[in-house]
Image (cartoon, rainbow, N blue to C red; front, side, top):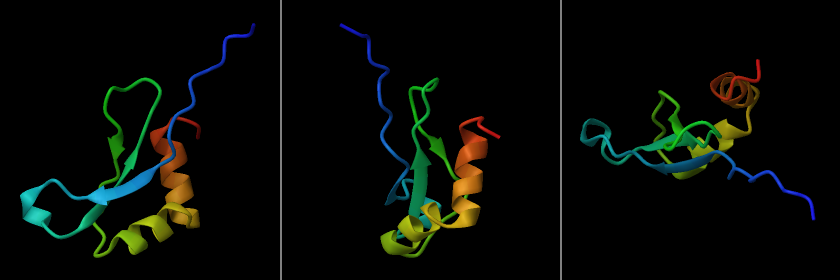
Amino acid sequence: MRNKKPVLPPPFAAPTKDMRYEGTYEVLVPAPDRARPHRVPMQFDTQAQAETWIHSEEGKELIEELLGRR
């Protein structure tokens, strides 16, 4: 039986925990070498905006940088 690599969850949008930005959303990027996900240093007004950003060219590039793939 082969050992399978653990599969990381994809980047996701979540309500911002920082009270200075209450009511906004942020993007979190799980990484294999970290206990906590990377936090993208941007706030979005809605969850839909954050999720759209994840799939944009800018989002894909920044996520790759955070994961050390660029």
